[in-house]
Length: 360
Image 1: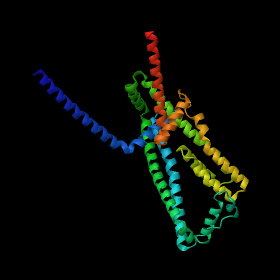
Image 2: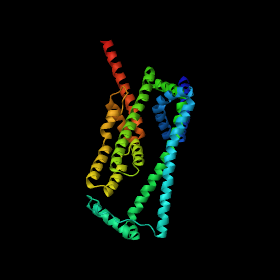
Image 3: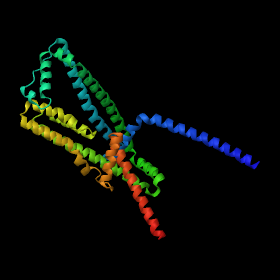
Image 4: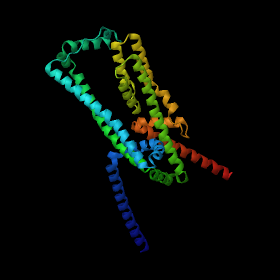
């Protein structure tokens, strides 16, 4: 009887445990699915908040200690910095497209013939000059001849615009989340410390501080390299005489921050320089553009990870590996994860060494 009773109790407990685990698993999965659309903006909001918190801490006393006001002003300034250029770009783009459409309908769109020097460009010169001359003499025939390429280019541009719009709204949401986190930074910091303490016990505060300093170090590397590349590119474009150098410099800064090679902007600009400048300065500018685009290979190891009590190589490996796996957000997630694992591994080695000395 005792055996049957214990078996019955065991089965009852097992069924109850299975039901509880099933309900808990369903709730966890449902919660993840619900917050999944906001997961990336939340992570970005945390990264922005951690990186900007020292600035907010300095500004808050100037506003009479009103931290919420400082956080709100930060959000408004960043949103304005995003919305105003975006609205100007959209307005000018729509105006340009509308003007081109009107000229096409009235058959007044005129494409000038290619300069003679275009044909002498290496690799692409002859084919580009031929296509350009065809478009200048007979635009309709050129459109028909290059219809597949134009269609593919249009789809690429459409996909890029779609991704850009999504990224723009994600950025706005991230800034709002960052402002909300900055307004309650002390509570958030305490919560993060408690979470790390649940896993690492006494090392919780140390790991929380490490994660914070790692995010700021990576942000310094990313933004610092982007600013250097943009400034160098702006100087080069100003010397050569590229129209609208300030706008191109801003676009290069954005590309560098989101980890796209500046050559995406500088390449077409260099091609344009060949159309009006002599060959020697145009070639020098092209080499300058390539060097700027390649400069992050040695600038990132110099800047990334400064102020972090972890070897720079560890931070760099985590950041670059994270970016390969998860994109730009992996720069921060990867660096933080590897830095924490490195710290825990060293702590484990120290504990093992202490135990060995105690036993001996």
